[in-house]
Amino acid sequence: MTDGWNWRRPPTPPAHGTPQSTTPGRSSGPEPDSPWWSGTTTDPWRDPYAPSAVMLPTPLAGGGAPEPVTDPDAPRRSWAPIIVICLVTALLAGGIGGTLGFVFAVRGGYAANGGTQLGASGGQIPENTQRAPESLAGVAERVMPSVVTVRVSGAIGSGFVVSTDGYVITNDHVVEGADESLSVAFHDGSTATAKLIGRDPESDVAVIKVAKSGLTPVSLGNSDDIAVGDPVLAFGSPLALVNTVTQGIVSALDRPIQAGEEGGTTRYYAAIQTDAAVNQGNSGGPLVDAGGQVVGVNSVIRSVGGADTEAGNIGLAFAIPINQAKRVAEDIIDTGKARRTVIGAEVITGETVAGARLRGVEPAGPAATAGLRAGDVITKLDGHPLEEGTDLIALVRKYAPGSTVAVEYRRGTKTASVSVTLAADTN
Image (cartoon, rainbow, N blue to C red; front, side, top):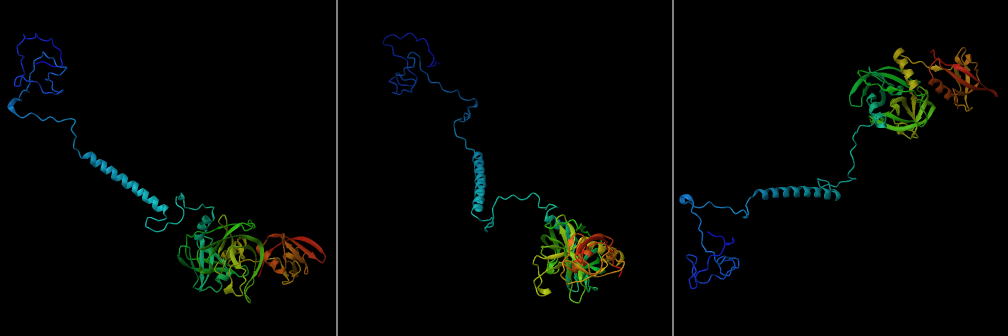
């Protein structure tokens, strides 16, 4: 077999007139006029002297059909890539569509449920929703479990726990007329019976004991340390609205208060004045400073109403200083009776003389011992100016028996000062 692409030396040309051999089975006539036919006489690359031959493939052993050959260039029919592409496309389309739908819904002002969404979006949620202990909300959360609602024969007042075994301080006028129906309610809604331990009508302080142990007492502060402008919170049940907290400031200190119903006991004390909202039902509840300590007992409000039923908050509320209330409560618990602080003199009330005029002086009493006489006008007690006689009574009650105070007085046209050691009333 010869290869038309391999060069061979041409054979000796035949003698003139001798016919050339032709490919077996092919006519000796002219070749088809095709440039791709390797046997054409016009093929410029064909060796004109090489013999032509047709080679047939050797039959397979056994005479079986030849093994089919797969054309590597033929397209393969596989469904796996198509399925994967469809799934990926569907997932991407669903994710993008859902995201765009949510964005458009929010920007369009509609919530997921089809309702209107109000307010700005994108706000961050606080990491800790608990209020700081020093915040007003933190103080309220800490004090509230110690505040109780006092129920007496259908009337409602307030009080606060001062010991784990159930002692509660409240106002005397809250428990006035108390009987077997005396009870208290706590901030969590639980209730308990209570009994009256003792009361001091003139200071308007009373102590009851709750039939429940393991209670959380309040922290008692020092009412002598507070100042005008300090923030305070008032706790209680105004108008039967239990668990109420109101905010204000200390408006004034040592405000002389004379309170009481006509024909009843007259009460005197040098009060803490505040503008915190206090109404009927707040009586006996604690007045608390910004540190969570009780500095007073809410007791009286000043109102423009003509009757008690019309009385309401106008920003003038008064609390018994806790130093005085604590001393009276301890006396009641320990002895069953409170000691009353006196100066040993009788004053004239209702007289405007820019001070407290003494009607009389008890022999061997504190005033007499200090050299004061009837007719003297006391103008200042421990630096506090006095307007009239009841101011002296209220300020004296602020101090504990045995305290020594500076007294400025006027006798005729002369002024002088002395130190007076106050005493407890022996009656």
